[in-house]
Length: 403
Image 1 (cartoon, one colour):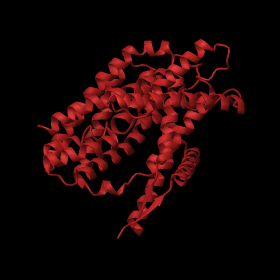
Image 2 (cartoon, one colour):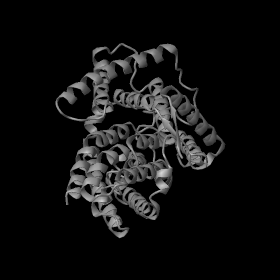
Image 3 (cartoon, helix red, strand yellow):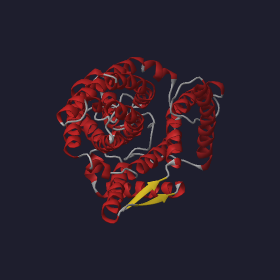
């Protein structure tokens, strides 16, 4: 019999910080992890998830984490991304954004073709293919859980939710591992360098610095935190307005938009105030928020759900991974220009296509900390994943489920 042990929100955050730092320690001791741009919270989070699996398998103890604190960190992180966005970069990002939208739609269609064919081969109803495809992969856990009841009603598949969660879980693990090596291969094999290497990193500080580390004092910290809080308050108001209009968007989206407005208006209206956007202080806060979020996300994975789906899951996910790798290296990298930014976006798309937006950003962060900044990549990919994916995914999934 399984015993469920509930972990409070405060304890979950505490464990997440510890897991993050364990990942840092391991990456420091194993240089090949940094060489392949594996993010520290991924290292620590996956190790923690294996320990959680051991408790479940060996002692029948299931840990149930309260992830309230984790979800706030996601809002904090994307608000920081918004503060870094410059209007000039957003205008310049129009073409890359449009190209990435098309590539994302092609990925959604291809994932569902592979999913449906795999489902039929292994004796599942064809409609269950969306759970082997874009509902669980590019959609993630939330989309899989949302659509599983529809699949169950259409097919009578009682284990639809468990199947969707298992696919999303394994996809997230793979996404966290492949993005960094993809970019490392592209950058090293083609000797790619940033277009504007002197810019500040969007997230985090460089792994290696030739100069003295930038000074981060209590005044800059308070200045950045106040600006973040103002942007989040405006984002909360915008989210409530959007919700009243009947539109459903995750909270981080209006916070990202409000932060873009705050960051650009602040520099126009108060040009003599000390800078907040693209400062080392904001980059450090963003890295903390993302790292802690990802560590908590990975340590709370229920890996035992993967074992329950057997051979079908292993084969179909292997095919989905091979498709993602081929598509990124042969299509996406070239379509996005074949330069350094394309390599950073390749790392992000690897995390996004098989996992989730935070995984994508973590992959890109690990790459830019090693090789140099690429600010536009951190704007383009979240905008695609926040606005376009849920709508396009819903249309495609609905067509397949109703077929």
